[in-house]
Length: 266
Image 1 (cartoon, rainbow, N blue to C red):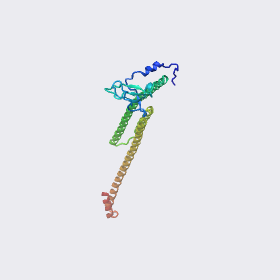
Image 2: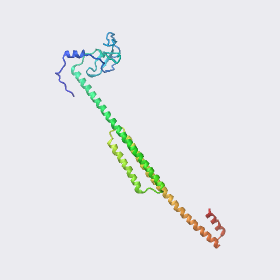
Image 3: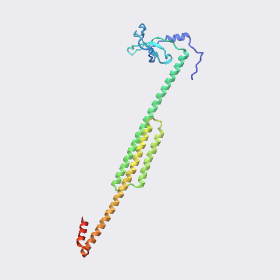
């Protein structure tokens, strides 16, 4: 709390001088339904335009709360200010208190503006990092796509070592994302954006793992089918030779053997 020297009071001459001080611009005002509108006394006019004044309540500095008649028709950007005070000047100690309060208000407001600028710069930094992570994520997806395309072209399945390496790369990206998230946790809205990006990384990781499993299972089934088909072809050839030998030797029912041979020829 500010302390004031009670002995340091203004004299009547100083108060009169404050009262007669020229105001060439209306101070800040506030709305008061009990004292507003045009002055009832038409003889109270502003000094420059000589127009009837309006009723105001000051809301600035040491005159906060004082009622006055002020300029109502600023012309050419000129405001001739207070024409007449309705209320007497406030006690000097109260004036100093009001000035101190306004100084504290402006200081706090200025601090908020500075904090806002810092937050704005920090938020821009976070957006740049998010853009960078987005580019890295897109590059990772592109690299994985190229890897699967190369595997398809070379008719091979990605080895476990390669798959683990890709998993490690994804985990490293996730760790970088978590570190960035921890460092920039004070920026508003950044947490949700980064958590969303982390979730997308996690989903992509699951998708890549599922795709790898599907490709391996599909190619394994294809290889098994190929082996079974080759075995059936060999068995078919053996059976054809056996039927041919039997028909030549005249064993069994030739009609039945002929039917079997026709089935094998299909």
